[in-house]
Image (cartoon, rainbow, N blue to C red; front, top):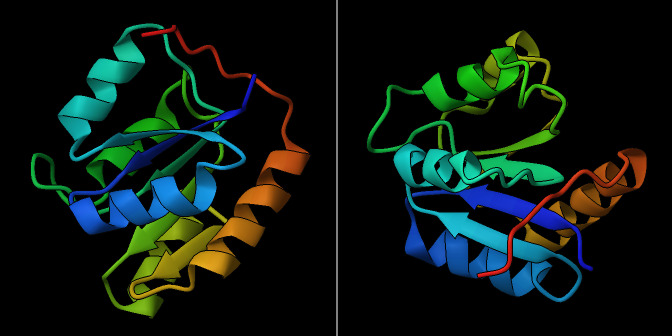
Length: 132
């Protein structure tokens, strides 16, 4: 079974790009907002990696990332941030939340793919994804 990535971004184009670039090697689940992502997670699904935009339409900036970082259930899942915010602001916030991998938009999908492969090689498979 393929390892699972949850990609959360309000841009349909970014979600399509992530699905296209990462979908050959991983099962990519996409969500357009925090509510959709949390609904998917509430169904006892656990991804091996979460790629997330800190600015989502239904929560305050960085709110979902703060939730993931502080939650006993999700804090051990690696996060990769894709941000359209200033690089220094993004770097400072990622440092605050213990996130080592981030990209500012626009980003190079091949570099992101390399980062995902490195992160996945460091973590044991945890994904529990229900069929359907």
